[in-house]
Length: 275
Image (cartoon, rainbow, N blue to C red; front, side):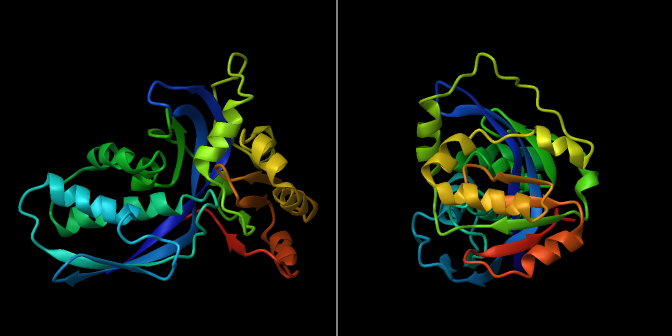
């Protein structure tokens, strides 16, 4: 069995007050895109995990944690599997690759082991593995509040068919570092916690990612990438999550194709919303 584990981008990301559990409340729109890792799951006499990325630890990997959670919390699980992750989504790029992998395995093992968990039950389990993981249980286009786990499906059909360029420099940004930096200057008293789903591409200009304030300051080349996307004809460009990937949304696919005909020193991917 081979499953696709899709990436996401964030349309806008507002950071609010720190909670008692040390996390921050946020408001964002998650968009699942057609860029993915592949995960192969085959029967085995014991649990094994392999990957094409040497930077992924075997024993503390998020998939290993999901696997162990099921084994430790559900009775009569006897079958084991060899799981192979073929990574394409960059680590530390703000595209949710690890979270997507975790959600993918949560769903696959639920079926293979006949656990009978529904979507809401899977989302409740998913938050144990990361704030973005619940989104990937259903994917699509959703508004995320709380730490990202309070999800509301939204209609973003106007973006279907719009080209998306993803540029990821050789920079891995730690999410805890990004939150630590943003906390130093965070002012929430006058922030509008009322993010609305846009209905036209023109409304994208109203969206901002709070992490850009600290990430672009610490890593000027990321700001240059955003400027490059805008100058190439992207209608909107933004950091995804806490970075380091910057994406550009193009009103015309031909404009994106013209941009991609150039040569780049950074990995660059063409994508669309996931169908």
